[in-house]
Image (tube, rainbow, N blue to C red; front, side, top):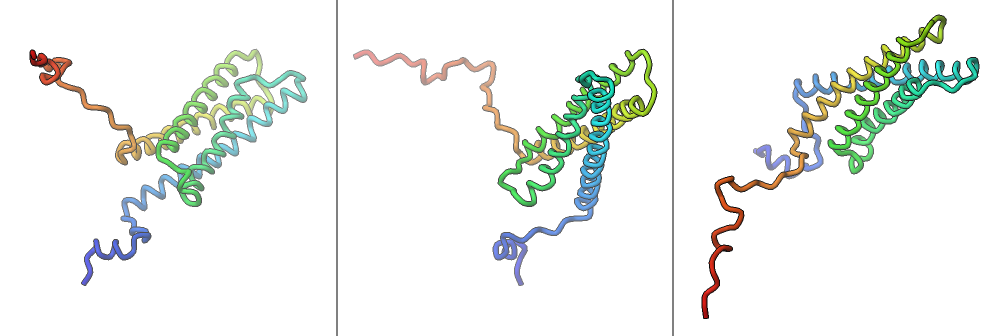
Length: 191
């Protein structure tokens, strides 16, 4: 009869069985990632259409608000691919702090992008046609991406805190203690 520790010692590379609560959280996490990828592709199409309209039909460069959401959608696609493929195929290049940084930066880019575009849209004198509808849909999809990336950042932050990946801070001495230790304050013996 072998115990669990002996079994683990004999098969160190064996993947442990997942509990049902862990599987349900993995399914939720995969659903969030899939939604991030799908909404990122949709947002890429919408903002690219608006940017193309400005560059071709309006003969002016596209506004920076559109360009920010265009960048955020491209950044989302690359981030989702890294966050899902790196842990599986290149675990040396995957770290929880990197995942936390990517998720929070995505949330910030989408927040800034959809707020900036909504302010830009509110200051237009008129807005009609398919380009206007695409820009309005870009605001909505940018807001949904922000919510998804914020939820993902909370999960990543929880993993960083619980996994012990935060740097250890040095312990401080008590305030009542003098800055010098008593042994350092002794006088040298007189010879």
